Length: 467
Ligand code: D5M
Ligand code: FE
Ligand code: ZN
Image (tube, rainbow, N blue to C red):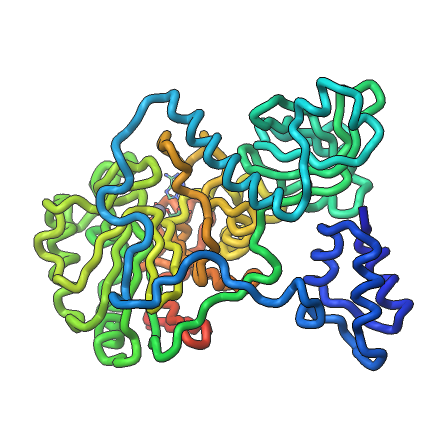
């Protein structure tokens, strides 16, 4: 096991600074010989050792690309794939599929043993080992250490992270139902696993986003909330006029809460200008008819839309789509669309409320940090049973696999952008001003903004239509 300080010191002694990505790579590999190998290949006058100096960190693309026509392709979450509500027993296959996929991502970087091999024999009693499992429970002890119960298909094991250890802040951010690997040792009496190091499935450090050539720009928005009395008609119209004139924008993606819906919260009828759900969609469709027919529009549902709330959410059904123009493509929540080969993972973002409630220091004003939390866990909604309803499906549909070029969410009504290991994360704001509820909760939205991404450069830009 290599500590961060130890790695930095080794490079420092040799007269170099070292990039944090290289440090985290070396921590994960845990092999001191690797540092010597790297140092022997570095020129003496090199100031900072970067990922590009290390052959095994050369950029690699993840997954299959779809670079042929059509230019817009729904890769996951096309109409009909969400499936019906299933039996409660299907949660077993949901979590098994989560463990298998995310566990194998961790296993690629760190050999692991089954929990059963630790509990049923004394062979590994004195050695450092890695176990991988789903966190079935996690809490802090009276002394501020972190204790959790880890489960794999062979057994369960209580795991302790000491708060005096290097990297404890990562352990503080462990949430229920995420899949992690822990490296450490079993206690002498065999009842507790002392963890030194935490592995998350994460985005590979060498992940290289695909940037299509001559692909133009895509506008990312969310949460139109059409039909609500707080819908911002004028900023919306300014946006529509602007995008109609913007020849370089080829696609408009909307990450859910297309309309305000009916009966979503108690007393909602008093806050609606259009109290009929068919009419909400019809009027929205008519507005979208005014946009150029050459603009490809992708529409996903959110928790205010007419479909079931449990995720994956199906596409908006045909009976609500009659007024939408032909250039609209309806997708599920979540969905992955490929635009000229660049993958955009669209997710409404209900789990952001849950993550903010569980991760120390998380704030509504910085939603992109929660998107990074999703990417580290390679899961859009890691925790089951809080505010994000998740359906029992045979395969876990909320996994982040493969890694997208862009992760596009909404829901919290606050714009936020970041880049994590080459993935651009965009939480798009809303077209609804602060609601009475948000005022009570002290949530201050940033409405009337669109984020435009140049796909060739992967550069985002915020456009404000509020005034
Ligand atoms: O959610 C917009 C934001 O406001 C999101 O962060 C959740 C929060 N919100 C809104 N209504 C509620 C209720 N009733 N309980 C808890 N949190 C809420 P939206 O999906 O647009 O309603
Ligand atoms: Fe919303
Ligand atoms: Zn929402």
